Every structure is written in structure tokens, then in C-alpha cells.
Length: 297
Image (cartoon, rainbow, N blue to C red; front, side):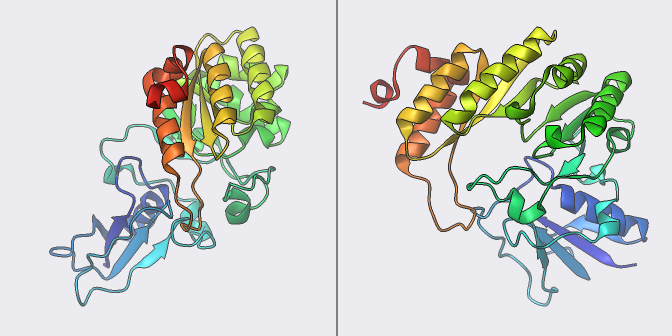
């Protein structure tokens, strides 16, 4: 039996799926798996995973412990789990407060947005799993797909119909592509149960009218729930403020995110951070009462 220690470098506010799969794989081999402690672990092997390049690295390894095996986008997007580990269902016991299933139906994306690392990391779109297998008896499922609606129509239909039939509560945590919403998939989305929102992204002015159209067609298909929209904030704050105001008028909850360079070299600006704070107050509704300049000046 080997002693395996895990390091979630980003922290444990959101489960690290790679570490969950590594834990499950090693436990299936009879190994003992614990969270790393420099005082108590005495591991034979250490896995350290970091999602975000801007997260400070973990440094507190004890002298004499093995060199960590490092992975995740924050270290090197090219590092991948072995196929047999990737197919392993996660070990949820290492995050005991997390109650939803977690996984990917698809990997990769058909887009090539210059600010996004997904094309470099995962390449084009691939269908990789099934909603019933991911759920594994749990009634809510958080999906990390970057562009689920870009998958083959038959696959999209099969997965959403199955989710509706099983009564699963869904959250496409990374957002759906508003540019790919059509009445046929809007009807399927409207039939599903949702953990809280249907999520989109509105990163440029060009996508704004696509988000507007997607919201309207999904509501027209019978959806009565809420919408949420990630908003990329770059240097043009007037552009960002216009998108913010239009989303709020649509009754879409915005979440503004300052642009971060995944190389870790470029810092967000104070203006971007200030705008994100302004945009995220009260679900964005503050922007209907005052402008960003009025709020900060």
C-alpha cells in the first residue's frame, strides 16, 4: 500500500476534479489517500494541482518528502491525467461538504477566443461522457463543459432528455454558448431542472445580441427560471458598462470578471477591478441607478 498525499493549491472552495479522480484511482488500488500535511503525511507520492496561474504556489513541503507531481492549468496546460484515471468516477469523500456530481460531458471548444486557454489545453470539441454515469445516483450535477451545445445534435438531445427524465438539477458552470441556442435545444433546456441559473457568457458587444436572442427563445420555450451571464472586463470600460446595463434590463444576473492573462505576467488593472466590484453589486442592478463614474467619483 502506498501513501498518497494531495495538495489543492487553489484552496477548497470548489472541488478539484483531477485530485478527486486521482484519489478514487489510488483507493481502488488499495492505497491510502490524505490531504498533504508537512507535519503528519509522510507520503510516498504527492500530487499538487493548480487551476489558476495567478494562485500563489504551495511551498510548505517538508524536507525529505518526494517532489510533487504537479498538474493543472496553473502549472502546465499540457499535463493531462492518464486515460484510465480520466475515466474514473471522482472520490467525493475528500470534499465532504460537496453534494453535487461533477464532471464533463464534452471537452474542448469550437471557438478560438484569444483570451481563453481551452483551445490550447483541450483542442477541438470531443464528447467524453454520459450524464447518467456522471450523476452516479446524485440528484444535482455540475458540468464543467466549455461548449456543450457545440456537440452533435443527437448527443445534446440525448443528454438533455436523459437529464430531464432522471429529474437531475443541472448547472453548466462554465456557461452555454448563446450563439448556438436554437428552438429545438431551447425546448430541451426549458424542460430540464436547474440548480439556479442557465448560464451564458457575454464577453464582447458582438455576443450581446446573441445572448438577448437566446434568453428570449428559451423563455419562449417555457423556461421560467433565472439566467446568469459571465462578463469579461477588458480595457474598454464603456463597452463593458453598456453590456452590463443591457443584461440587467434583460433580467439576467451579470458577473463581471477582469481579464487575466493565463501566462500570469499581466496583472488586472485597478480600473478593471473597480468596475467588476461596481458591476457585481446587488446582481448588477446598481447600474440602473448610477453610472460607474458616479459610483467611484
